[in-house]
Length: 160
Ligand SMILES: CC(C)(COP(=O)(O)OP(=O)(O)OC[C@H]1O[C@@H](n2cnc3c(N)ncnc32)[C@H](O)[C@@H]1OP(=O)(O)O)[C@@H](O)C(=O)NCCC(=O)NCCS
Image (cartoon, rainbow, N blue to C red; front, side, top):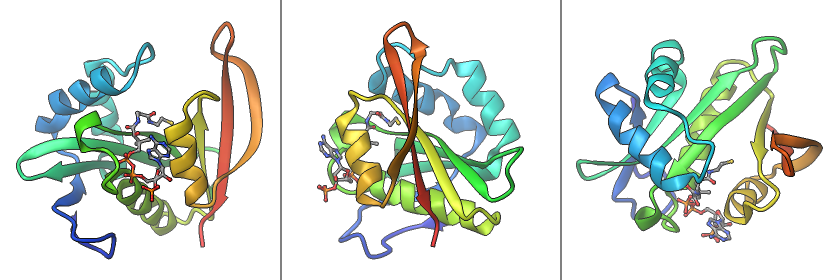
């Protein structure tokens, strides 16, 4: 599975499926992209084992520069979740996040999902802009989701 230049410009990056040897690079992305609530290495490995087909890697040359995980909801058949999406700081603003999200949505659609959801921190403006640009709207919020004073915004979009 490789998604190359698919209309997002003169892409020098690509999206492919996760492989076990990607786990350390994904862990490094977690370290560089998130402040407190980073996935530990063992969780990345386990997510890769359980959700292999839902785990996307963004590559640029030989480097792993981003990733996303998109999984159908275990309880609501038509709903899917973008569990995580991140791009290394030095590779941002060239369309990789958008392409990862587009491929993640395509994956959810292929699994029968008609709605995609995600959780965003209220202060995470780049992420909110990324999702809103693709049609996600706030559907609810939850206080103290990430810890005291660290709230959750739930964003959702119809998958056309
Ligand atoms: C959010 C993130 C994945 C975006 O990745 P990216 O590769 O830079 O995204 P893109 O270049 O594809 O940008 C797509 C759109 O997102 C929005 N966006 C991205 N970064 C932005 C920023 N710093 N400020 C405002 N809007 C931004 C813009 O609408 C942009 O479209 P445009 O370039 O046409 O204006 C990246 O900033 C990141 O990894 N952040 C840290 C991890 C994180 O917060 N993940 C989300 C958890 S919910």
